[in-house]
Image 1 (tube, rainbow, N blue to C red):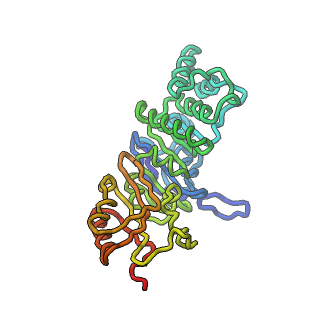
Image 2 (image 1 turned 90 degrees about the vertical axis):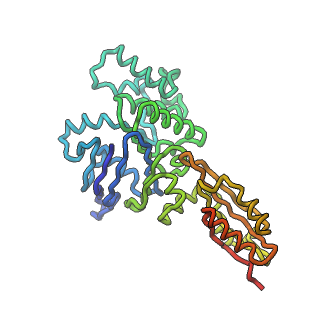
Image 3 (image 1 turned 60 degrees about the horizontal axis):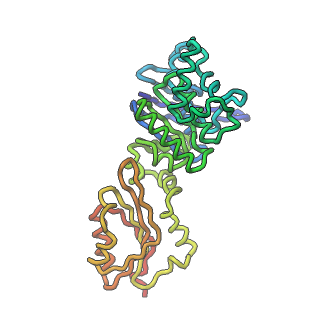
Length: 350
């Protein structure tokens, strides 16, 4: 439904230097997908999403919507085509002087609809986003989550096929974020909306998206099915991003700091285990403990449901009671499709 071909966006700085905010990015987003574009601050993801609806016109490259090249359209035709694309932002962008009803109705101002049809449409949208009871209050009387629901209703007023979400949950607390993500899922399923989510919040991507693209310094460095990208990241930036929401990666700093928990006895080692969907449901820890006569002390653990598949990992201290036990246990885990990383090893110390 959305195709970007070699899209670049270059800004001129105050000193007449060039800033390559987006660099030669190509991607395809299918109809009905919830597609996440993630990256740390300054990665270029917000600029990229604004290139989709030409709020930022690409310096070079082409943008297609349903096989129509937006970048070649004359202004009037582009304005008409843009109505297929709704957009919501981090700061809501509501009119403080208008009540909720009038904020949503504002998006219909050029439709030429009679007053009763406008009222019917607005109330339908407010009910859809579960805020109909606030129709005649003002934004200053709303919570952040309620404001975002109004912004979503307004974005849906022209019956778009695509909804662009630019850091739409960044200003919200975790509980409110969850409710907004649940609403976006509902809109995707009930309206068939294609949703593009720009975020630096890993939990948003895990909870909501079907596919994901990772950006860094204006470049698209990795993309694919969300489970595949998170279970086998190909780029260190992607791994760093994933680690922001997992306590498992904390082991590296603890080892570097020589924390007491990382001090090993003879015959021990610290191991990081990375599970995939084929193995995470099996009782592998108790199995290796019995089969290879190895004590397993779990330091950190993290198991998540991502795109209906289980993904997880553990950091453990293994202690072998007889020589070769840990080696046998590690070999067995690898055979069971578990990634094994030995972080520190005291098996062979004197």
